Length: 245
Image (cartoon, rainbow, N blue to C red; front, side):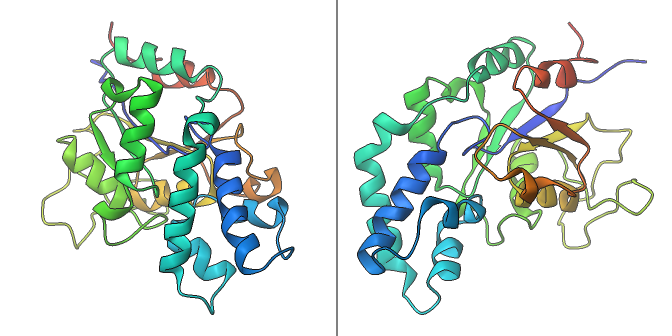
């Protein structure tokens, strides 16, 4: 049997980049101007992973999210260089996957330009063949569109959500015929938030939930995932186990 290299799609914030404090600090900066003393960091952790607009709509449904988003982004630019860091051990993981010619992409709710800037700062741009950001899709995680978009950009036919028996089911809205499970390499989506696990399942790809971000463990418990990992190097054992040399 000839093994195929996997396709690996990563979430960005909290999964490969340690940005939790940057995101929380930026949110608190905005909220303290609108509702001083009303929120602390623990109030905000469960909103991480959602698109920024959705975060503000949930936190302040009566407010126009546009000026809040602009204030957030303006402030975050001032702390970006000091608060952006790789997840410890992730550099070695990405280097190893790249050395084995594993196709990789980013699927994130962060704006694409911001993600590209972060990858450039980290020296990681060359690792990834595609980036799907907030503005690239009409529907956002947990909808499967971002993952399907990344796969199509990588030249891989998307597949539909899993049936109850675990097999793939075609997405009737797709404009192309989808590859069968036997035709395509294994596809993994690696993320740290419930929306990541739900998006992977909706897209019919293998879900890898990681436990090294600031997401609350109780928020992750009970999620239906294929693999849960507690440290980055475990990704190599999972993703390279059947990869041809």
